[in-house]
Length: 166
Image (cartoon, rainbow, N blue to C red):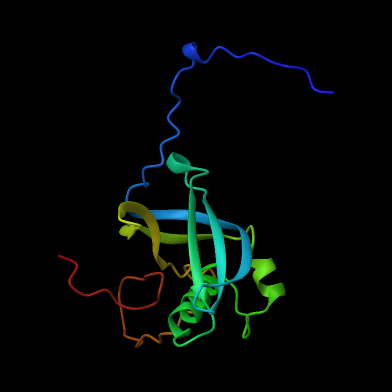
């Protein structure tokens, strides 16, 4: 049995809750959910929900649909590959397990703003413009450079003479 409740909404402050898109820029994102769906045209696509991790817009949500079958799935599959690379993944094949492993993996992306029309109404949404490749974290070995030996009167740390002291 549930009890009735009464809340006075006349004194409630507007706490923001804006549905305006976040400004264009580079943000840290994390995928939190995905599902496989079929479009009205019969194409298979993956619907992914990303959550912004960057401080100023934390917890805002961006969605993306990746078409993986139909007349032209190349764009969707290419973008999926870019996302895998942005998370540091190197999987040669995309499977349900790989998609599950992409969840909760942080990555950087450029976010843009997209205008669209639906049922005669204009909407403005955020869109992932590009998935950013992580910077290399492994140090590259330095090429050994051999210096010519020259005679010198003043010793140096390298053993080479220093010219033009002026």
